[in-house]
Length: 631
Image 1 (tube, rainbow, N blue to C red):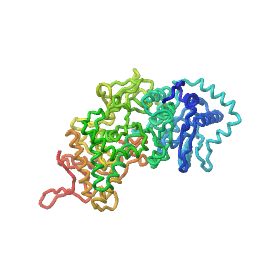
Image 2 (cartoon, one colour):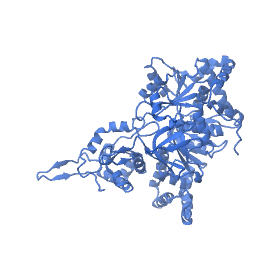
Image 3 (cartoon, helix red, strand yellow):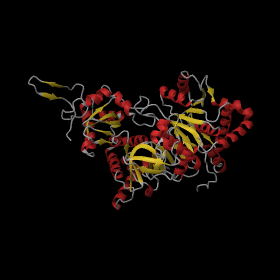
Image 4 (cartoon, rainbow, N blue to C red):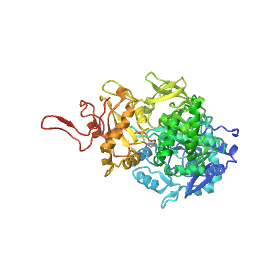
């Protein structure tokens, strides 16, 4: 049974008092893997080390409001530093380890960081290189032992002789800190320019943590696995909610070890972004390709049954019988793959495919999709685990304490205690998103289904108008096409043009399997994406999609690209969103080629490099190897 709470956190560091008063007998507050072994931290460890670190920061001369940067994978060290920064009245600036040097330098200059804490040697080398370009050089500390680097334990050791005095200073500082004080600067991913520093107060994020707390079905002493970066506001807010509830948090070693770590921990809950859900789904579905014909038939039959799952339980008795068979034969193994204890999976960050939501639900793995932004701390709406408070295809009812209205142009506006204080050093940008009445303009288009469930249709800034006056909502089409096993990423284009087209980055792992199965010979990925059989296959995928779209939305041309889009290569943000301006610039010549001959019957598909359009001696034109279909 859940323990009755006696302590309400109004400032983030008050959570430590909850650990002392309500969670003292919790075996594991946090755990992480080191050389294959789980290293566990008790609530007492968490409180003691947080105070030691806070003492060290004050002893090092940090003043209220100073900025401290952290760049690290998920570790208990991050939480300890986070609490220490909050207690010392400083401002935590967590940064994605994947940011490039230019973005990192911009953030360091913008916030005027006094210290930077990194987790390992690779990040230390990266930060040291950036710091050399700064006039005011912040001190760099590492969580792990790195040659010639200052380890963060040296800070604590240096302050031990004054610990009693420093603890009194901490208590004095804590009295000066209100719930409205800024406790963190979270820089947006910068898909359209330099990152903006979102100023979040203690009240902002705790209002969200307490708002979702009642929705989280996991209870005291149950377990969560964490693998989304803690600098992601969604994972961070949920992390605080887990702490408030006394849920033990285990940090996965890496993205590559998630399934193994899940098997170790057997969690009751974890968070993920939709792209990770899609990867899990792809991995599970790909298992079917190596099965015997009979097992493959059963597997595919089960998927077909699952795809018709009605979460409102309106399915017929005959359907429920088939679903029970599918669960025993196939879907039971899905649950085992997630450790066997999963109560709920929480998803946010972008829209989740309805197809995947249905299949996971049919398998008994409930995915609660939510919606929000860094600027809203982040949750605006979220589906509950209870089916009567959720609707697949929407992001659920509006979170308690948050108010939402749909503007005249369809934009979602939000108001509440979770709305940021503004953008750091950027009053103009703040005025652009928070109006005089206090409404935050999300930039997303949506509607309230049944007057209750919020549905996101697209990004306001991403909707574009074609030359025929019709508007295209690209995300809706992109998400549908990404249901194909052959598509890893896709961007819909066509602004001010006569028709819509697509740039597709294939799922090369699946495409290589397909090529091997169908005896398609290729030298490299460039040759593979230009093979006529491959072009024909993708045209088939496009045709299936077009059958579900309005005429003006149909993809009339597409091009496959041989590059895999990622954070490292710049096409994706750290939250795995498309950097559309970057992609447009990178493939400008391809886009020009797509729309160069708009009047030539709107042929589609990648053009084979060997194919040409030329005049033959008799004046006839011959079209060679251009994938096309009629719409």
